[in-house]
Image 1 (cartoon, rainbow, N blue to C red):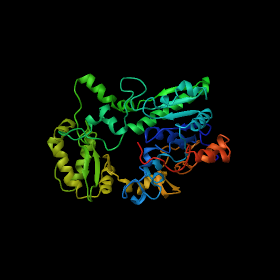
Image 2 (cartoon, rainbow, N blue to C red; image 1 turned 90 degrees about the vertical axis):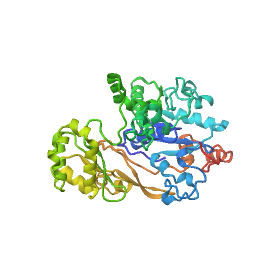
Image 3 (cartoon, rainbow, N blue to C red; image 1 turned 30 degrees about the vertical axis):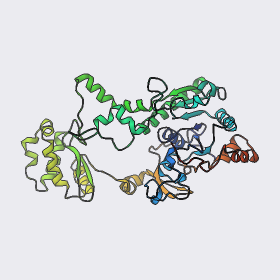
Image 4 (cartoon, rainbow, N blue to C red; image 1 turned 120 degrees about the horizontal axis):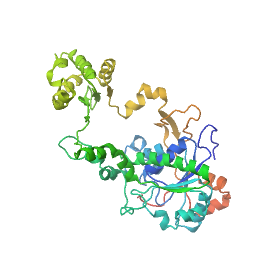
Length: 430
């Protein structure tokens, strides 16, 4: 096991991580960044879905250069972004010896976290009370889609459906059109952030009282928590907010506008009369006469009423200019503006380079690639990406030997009986 740098603030905590896909792994990623010892445990027959299928087609963007390679479950970018600085082990809980090893892992862990379908561990005989027999002060974080109580508790759910059930998709989309998915499964990282925050509170409580606790985190309710303003507005006015694309409900103009180049855009917003006049003067300088004095746009209300015409005028100006040039002109004039960045733009951006937003990590089966680093900077206890995401079962011998004290022959026996291993035994994942 690697020695954790002294300055990492969570270096004295160990988390047994049974979670999968995004919500749970994002929580433990935040802990790993700050030095916690994360032991990611997977099944050989049903490993983390973010590793991808056993035999994927070529050309899928999640694999470097679209090439799955001989062991695609170790090359998937989704997985490798979320599991840096974690130890990876495999273990089959359907086998008696696997259960005995699992119980020993629980006994040395501060936290157990999972985001299975509600009751999955219970059905294996591992209720919170049963787990506490192995570690009395254990903190158990359970993150099923709909929580551990209520009429929906037994339903299986993923982030892709949470926007619809939270009401978010009702708001996303363009005027006069139907609901539209945002393009990312917001519920997953939001739930992971919520879980990390409440886990910190639970660890603080245990430090004061010596007592662990069971934490019930609903992924669905994490999405609902983002809807506060809309819920309050409806209660106060009796009206639902209409879908409006990239426009603002408060300011005009506020939208994304086309620029020079294929699928290139800039975002512009004038949040008060002064910013509007400054925007109009910049456009007037490009031979659109008298825009600053146009009576149709005198006030915020009039600009909202004539937003379609404003968008047409602004688009005619932006379409002939490059996004960064528009941004420079408008920001110099005191108008909020920014280019809409794509993936390559993020990696090349001078600001992100200066702050070290992306870190280069050399993965044994992928090679050196850039990944999102740690989005905060702490002067006294800085976080650190310490090593790449684990290949399947990479740290079996380290964890079972150094932490549990199993001998080489004992670990060999676990491998020979299929309790642990480094190759998937199933043909698919769920």
